[in-house]
Image (cartoon, rainbow over the protein chains, first blue to last red):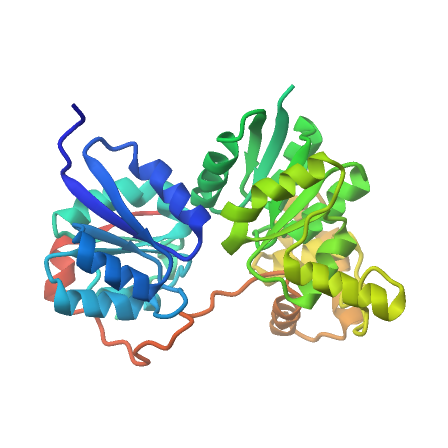
Length: 141
Length: 247
């Protein structure tokens, strides 16, 4: 019998190869399960509704509907679900926009292999995690 | 004997995805990984892989320059370029650089295995759009690819293109010199030559040139519009629990 599933994760990115890479990291953690994948914003919303994951790992730039819009809708319709952005945008402004949209986490893709497990750990506990590749570029509000 | 593949992409998560995909294929192995073009060139020379997979948009030395350097070192290198776009100019530059395969990142999960198999059989692999472009060029001019526009980077040497990328990425002449094992004075001389040849007058002009000519990539916003004005994150919702990691 396998480990008890503690965290159910939906992966959303328009590049299958990135989803594959994310899975190789996530599958290291016993008890975490990738319950589904989506390649655009509309599909993400549909799968979130049917699969009801604990955490949605979400890209920003995607066809049909971008991740920020998906995040806002998820926060309105399914407030128990947490959103973690994994994105190429290494930008404090984008990070603020993501958190303002209701995400609990923000990880740049260049740090994803290092930070993803810790980020999901915290986000699934409704805590905030952020990681930019260039933290010196963070300017105070 | 296994087919040995070298992966070069600046995102570890992408390399992991590519490695997972390729290692499912019996008889193939990932013999090395590189996170920028310079490391790719070094490792390819050292490891002599059967196939090199190179992302175009990488720091320090982009994938096109890395491809040029490898082909110049040994024309038998079999290189597949991974790219986010198959725009005409990118295709043209990749082919000119000596790539034998051209795969869109968005289609890599589907096309990469076919591309490697093609190269194994001493064939080339291109996306359908690149094939159309090649055919159109061939039919129009009896040439491998249409050249309605003049090549964009003919006046710069390989070394000058490397230095242009490094300066446009924000490195000083001293930093560029250190990376390239040159003296600062030599880099300054190259820099003056670059500015003169391209008729540029400032680093800002150089950055614009580098972006226009795909020597560096810029971070674009989300494809579909989002809220234009970003309100500050409310302190009470973020600050108490925030975990900020250093790079």
